[in-house]
Amino acid sequence: MTSHTKFEITFWGVRGSVPTPALHTRKYGGNTPCLEVRAGNRLLLIDAGTGICRFTERLTQAQEQGLDITILLSHTHWDHIQGLPFFKLAFNPANSIKIYGPKRAGFTLRSCLEAGMKPPNFPVPFDLLKGINQINEVAAGETIELDDLKICTAELNHPDGSIGFRIEYQGKSLAYCLDHEHDNQNEIHKGLSKLAQDADVLVFDAAYSDEDYPKFKGWGHSTWQVGYKTARKLNVKTLVLSGFNPDLGDDDLDKIALVTNGMEGNTIVAIEGESLTL
Image (cartoon, rainbow, N blue to C red; front, side, top):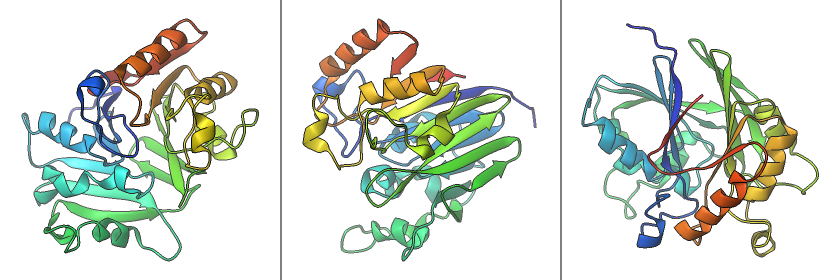
C-alpha cells in the first residue's frame, strides 16, 4: 500500500438539530453533521448525520467495496446518527466499518444505534448493516490509536453528554468540538481546552450568535463569537464554524463570514462539500 501524508477534511453536513434543505440554505448546505477526515491511508468520518449520505454519493462513484472506514460518534442524539440507516456502504459486508462512540451508564452504544432502526419506526434492522464489524465504546478522556493517528477524547457540555475529538497526525492536529455549550463567556471548558489548545484546526459549535443565545441557553450549543474568543485564547490556527441552527440561512452565514473575515486570525464558515488541508 502506498503511504500518503495528506491530512484533509471535507464537510458533508454543517447543520444542527434537523436537516434544512431549502433555497435559502443552498450555499452552505442543509445536512446534519458529518465530517470526512483523510489522514495518510486512513479514512475517518466524524458523526453520521444526513451528511454521510452526501459523502456516500461521491465516494460510490469511484469505489463501493473493500473500504476500511472508522466512524467517530460524538454522541447519539438523532441528528448525529440519522444517516446510518441510509449509509449504503454499511450494507456491504465487503467493507470494514468500525464505530467508536461514547460509553454511557445504563446504555450500550449498540443499543442506542439499534433503537432508531426498530419497528414500527423503521423497517430495516441494524443487524443488516453487515459492513459494520466493530462497535467500540470510549470513555471520555481515553485515547484511540490507529496506526500513526492519535485520537484524544474529552467530555463536552451537552445534554445527555457529548465527547469531542482531537486527531493528531504528522505533527498536525484537528479538534472537533460540536454540540458544546460554553459555561460562561470568560472561562474555557476544561474538555474544550484539552482538545483545542494549539490546534491547527478547530471545528466549533456555532449554532447561535451572542444576541440570540439567551433564547436557547441550556440547549447545549454555543455561539460563533464564543468560538472566536476560544480560538484566540487557545492559539488555534484556523477556526471553522459549523453546526448551524436550522433558522440560519445563507444570508445570515454570509454576514458572519464577512464580519470574521475582517477580524484577526483565520476563521472559516463551513460549507458543505468544501475541503480544507491541514
